[in-house]
Amino acid sequence: MTVSVERARDYPMQRWVFEDAAGRFDIDLGDSNMLPGHLDDLTLPAGLELDYGHDHGLGALREAVAGLYGGSPDSVLITQGAQQALYLVYASLLSPGDRVIGFRPGWQQSWDVPTALGCRVDLVGFRPDLSFDVEAAEAVAGPDVKLIVANSPCNPTGRRIAERDLRALVALASRTGARLLLDEEYALDLSRSPALDGDRVISVSSLSKVYGFPGLRVGWLYGPPSVVAGCAERKFLSTISNSVLCETLAREVLADRERHLRSYHELTGQGLSLVREFARRNADAVDLVEPEGTPFAWLWLRTGEEPLAMCRRALDLGVLLMPGETLGASDGFRICFARSPEAVTEGLRRVESVLRPHARTTAPPPHDFTAPEPLTSP
Image (cartoon, rainbow, N blue to C red; front, side, top):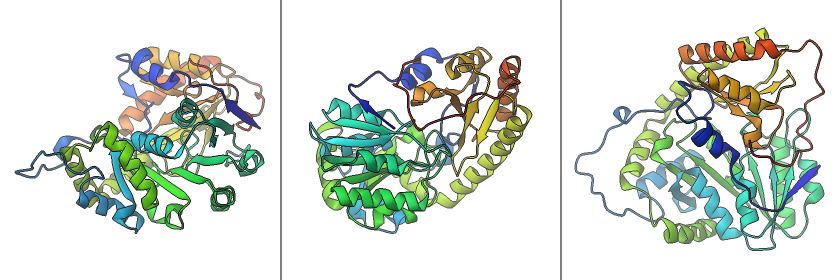
């Protein structure tokens, strides 16, 4: 089943994190990124000239990003985080009357921005096992589809698009003349990106999630040079270029990529073990969806309480979680475990005290992402 988006709305996630929760927590299990790094972890080159840089991004950084894919720097545009990369694709490829297919729950920008540009957006749910419902996307696709937007691994489910479903989405884009915009923020191996296999796929990623440097605001898109050129024109009209300082530091992060990935695997491995044990202890209150490489997990809430209400009570104890309502879902929450074992342990202890009085002894109705409810703000 699909939901058509008729107008842009405010951002429930923005209000939850920056207004409702601001200054009220000491343990952050709500954000979706690796534990943030520090400037002390990086080295500033002496004599760095702080000029305008380049509208496409510094050459050395573009080469480093191209190396992640095993492709050409001509296919790379450096942006102000993945958010700008996604926005530039929408702004450069879409026109009023175009049709966009997306998946929900997910990142609200993917349906709000196209809607604001005058497009029709059809949101597709997930199958009961949380795999991508490609058949539902195919059912609503037509000759007016311009863009298909997907996220793998998915935020908030933590699940990757299966290879067969990914091939089907690429084939759907080719058959309809659309492009597939693939948000690969949490992909650990971009050399396997379908953006390398033709001119229908655009990949977006950044240093924010896996590497833990969201404060650098460095992201990129990888795609056909013609798309890169169109997005670069839009970028020039807004920010001209990125910070030379941030792009230079980003190049250093990628030069030391293996060390950063080792830290990521170590921290997420420890954290996920703690979340698994938490879910086993509280099986009458939550169901864990096993993540596939993400620093967070989705937990179905079995208590019958609205996730936002539960997360507000956890916030009263100083723990930030991400209620499903902020991501277009209504019966679960996202929890980040890429934090120190001490922080995860203490955070889960507080969340458990919130859940226990509301645990139920009878099974709730089956969870369902196949028919998204209209988005409501928390």
